[in-house]
Length: 75
Image (tube, rainbow, N blue to C red; front, side, top):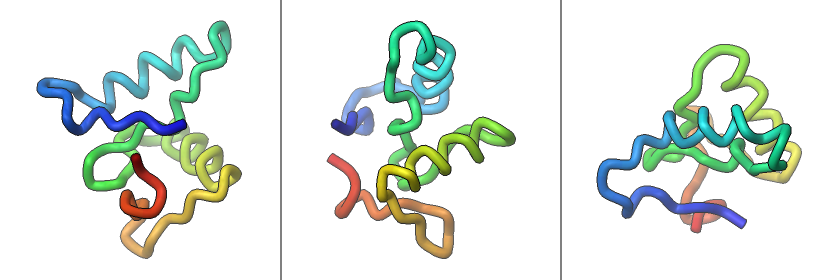
């Protein structure tokens, strides 16, 4: 299941992803499925690498510009 936060005014996907990530071990939340409206991962560093790996393990494909085709993989 994917979550489309693009239509929610004032929602910062980076903050949502970090919050879900911090709670994921305890509550088994799919934090890695939150990407921004451009189809890109908002997190940086090690968290970005982990998120991309998790998405790719679920069959999500990234383009040459490191973005996900939201028409194919989004909600």
